[in-house]
Amino acid sequence: MTYSGTIAPLVTPVDADGRVHEASVARLISSIRSEVTGLMPALSSGEGWKLSETQWRDMVGYAVRYADGLPVLAGIHLPDTEAVVERARIALDLGAATAVVTTPFRSDISQEEIYQHYRRIREAVPIPLFLYNEEAVSGNKIELDTLLRICELPGIVGIKESSGSAEYTRRAAQALDIPVFEGWENLLSDVPGIAGMIGPLANLDPALCNAVLVDPAPDVQKRVDEACERYGIFRDDWYRYVKQELHRRQVIAFPDVVAER
Image 1 (cartoon, rainbow, N blue to C red):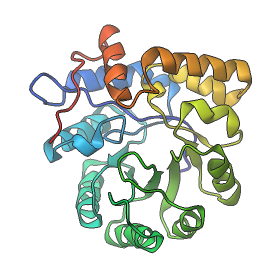
Image 2: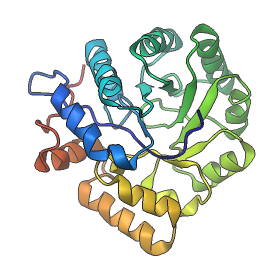
Image 3: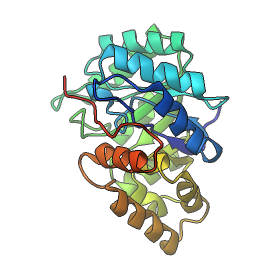
Image 4: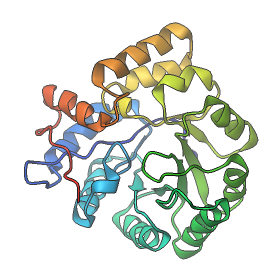
């Protein structure tokens, strides 16, 4: 399928004992379903790099259970290729439509190693891939030439572009037929014509996310920026504040974040 619009990178609701809370996942999806085109559990807004395998399985499985027709794009936030391949196989078995994969977690990685990482995943598992270009967790970025080369592989169906550079995002979108999604809400008006957005605000106000995609005018972008400031989305631990607001709204039962492993 071709992806577009607002895809929600779901937070991971956990109880005080760290168990993924199924009823909260169901309520969260119900609260945003009418405004989003897909669900992306267990990525950075879902604290994916902190999830145990059990937590990850539960979160992705519950997202599939309550998706009600929405595609589930399973985030895989693991440090090396072998671990990603194993998890991608599980995502496929759980019913995910796509796996969303970052680069290996190393600051000294070469661009050739990044390319080979994605090539090996595509050869090992018959699940379509979303590329996730970010630096906060992996410690590196995909250079544009490498991105274009990766996108020549079969089965690459989208890019969550979170480099923080509007110029990079624009160049990628212009060069590729594959849909490119902006991962930073504050840059949406600077990247007109992209396929959509994937950002934490979609957990709280996906209608506003859709509004700025339709009309990326300064006044609409200002409303987005104000909402992000209000909900703590520009903070380093944004997922904590998104959870607190969802708990205040009684969408999720607990405001707890996932414990570090």
